[in-house]
Image (cartoon, rainbow, N blue to C red):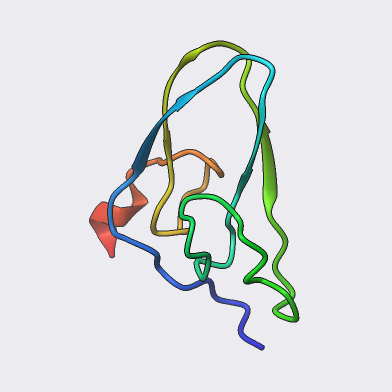
Length: 80
């Protein structure tokens, strides 16, 4: 069991979110439905992070899993 997530991609995932809807961001990097959880974290020690959209807009979910502003991209992928 690794405590380091897999890098899903070295760029953010732009997503049009809907106000009031909950999204579950993949923290392990193993999901086939990036940037969202598909249950691949089972038995890894990772758990999805809930994000609730406050308004309809485009947001950028982290793809490298190294962000300090999870689940949003903070540009950390540019340092990998």
